[in-house]
Amino acid sequence: MSGDFFTEVPGRIGYGGPESSDPLSYAVYQPDREVLGKRMEDQLRVAVCLWHSFNWPGSDVFGVGTFDRPWLTAGQDAATASRAKLDAAFEFIDKLGVPFFTFHDRDVAPEGRTYSETRANLNASVSQIEGHMARTGARLLWGTANLFGHPRYAAGAATNPDPDVFAYAAAQVKTMLEVTHRLGGANYVLWGGREGYETLLNTDLSREEAQFARFLALVAEHKERIGFKGTLLIEPKPQEPTKHQYDYDAATVVGFLQRHDLADEYRLNLEVNHATLAGHSFHHEVASALALGAFGSVDVNRGDYQNGWDTDQFPNSVDELSLGLHEILSAGGVTAGGFNFDAKLRRQSISRTDLFHAHIGGIDTLARALLAAADMVEHQTLAAPRSERYADWSKELGAAILSGAVTLADLERRVAAGEIDPRPRSGQQELLEGSVNRRIWAVDASRERETKRAGR
Ligand code: XUL
Ligand code: CO
Image (cartoon, rainbow, N blue to C red; front, side):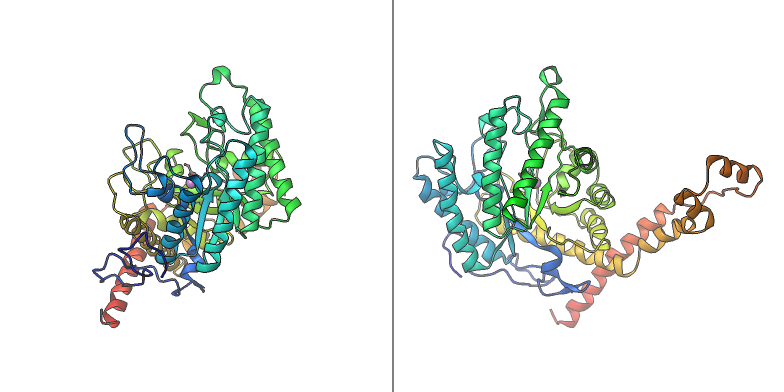
């Protein structure tokens, strides 16, 4: 297997099973294992993101980079550095054995002195990416444009008070949408990093909303024009970097899209840590997006429950992911979307191999959650009690109310006549919590049996 950056990992990470003592093997993730009629790899469509892992040196607001990322050292020739970065990134993706990757324009090519130079830098990197894709079989889950890093975007991109900035952002997205199309991307993501405000004292909310809607309409038009068949995704996040971001959460984004007649054009890319920042659970955001017909894809990671910011840690809670995955599987699973590891190492995790440990642990957590979720779908653990709970809405009274066949006066008449006399019923929360845990434990037990049978 080619590559000389991650030399401590000689080949592709394989399945070792839960009893394996080799940390450079998967305990759960088995691409070919069948889960609800699909290969595990196709249920999860795992992606590695190029920004946290290859384009971030491990700096924070208090300190400089700590990681061993030679291509990020200052003073090098930009094209050579970019090539080294892509070589290492695709060596990693290939060795990890996952099907997808994701990137921003600026992750793979630096900003030049002029827009044309920037675009030429990007095109050169994209040609190299094509070569890596052909060689390794890696595919693009989504591309996106970085509309938040450069100082020109400090007051927003589409929502900037200066139309010149809107135009610049439009040019950047046009190029990156075309790049995503050229690379056969399954989706294109828009995260409104600075589409929000720092203070209402200088902000005209209605103007910024109109600008943002115009921008999204232009993007959808261009998608049609170039014949890109992937899904356009908006990634909700409530704050950080700005004090308040317009794409606050799933429900806010869908309301915005509906107000501007854009709901058919866009779906959502939900991120676990963004859900918690919005005061929701990941389960809530997934269930809301599905109920609103807007679910698209997932940025999988986790937050820290003591911190109020986006820590973007690798996921390690099966419980947290199982419930969200259960909703997704119940609705038929991901289609064009997938699970993108928008997660980053802690600053002290400085060995090259730490990047493998982080992804292997995260992917195993996700795979384990998938098995638990599939088991709940098969056993109708939540589907059966849910449909039982609403069963009366299919009977005479419920159906008449929903079809509009009765008025308030009709209902009052029947209540007054004593014909309708509701009796409270149990919501059974603790019973259901126990049922979910039983399924999670049952998956553990059956895996233990399998391991014993395999003689491991
Ligand atoms: C920021 C974030 C982004 C988007 C892509 O919190 O999640 O990395 O996923 O721009
Ligand atoms: Co994200």
